[in-house]
Image (tube, rainbow, N blue to C red; front, side, top):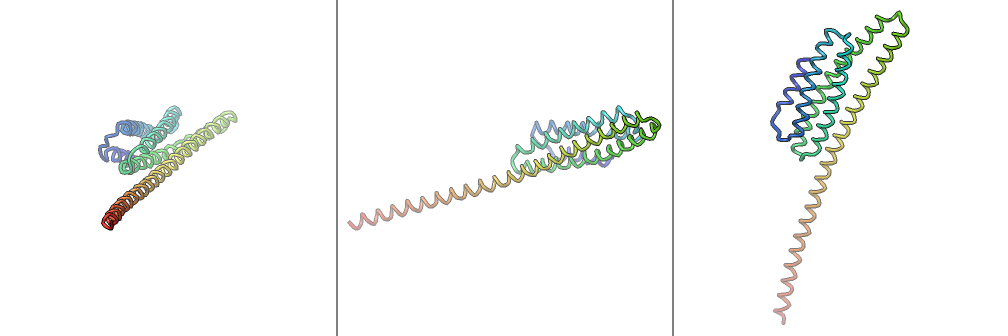
Length: 199
């Protein structure tokens, strides 16, 4: 757990970038990460705290939304800055995914414990199964969201690279055209001068 938070802090302090909106979301990510980490530490000592599980679940939803906003901001920068910020975004996502894995384990233990404690009551059992299904569905929603963010990031970076190549090709063609025009103009002048001499 401490290694995950150290990675987050190292990523956060990897270098000053004068991008106010990106830094705002980056700082929000760090703040939410600390809260999640603290909650998970408490849950490991007492995984039966339902209210803490619920609040942590919401924190994960919020932080993955922040990651989406960071990804959107990264797309707006030049290629050099985009590469640097993309690396930071990827590290952020890896770190929070590790925390999310810990949280899933806690949720699983929580639900198993509920099933054992209430095994004598069908009504209680059904409620626990419903809760478990809800947690599973919400986890799938989070995972789908993160996969979509990854796909969008990869596509946007590929498009940017391709657009840059096309722009370079267009500039090269324009330069060739200009050079050819200069050569043509010079040839015309030489022919015209030769014609005048012949008369």
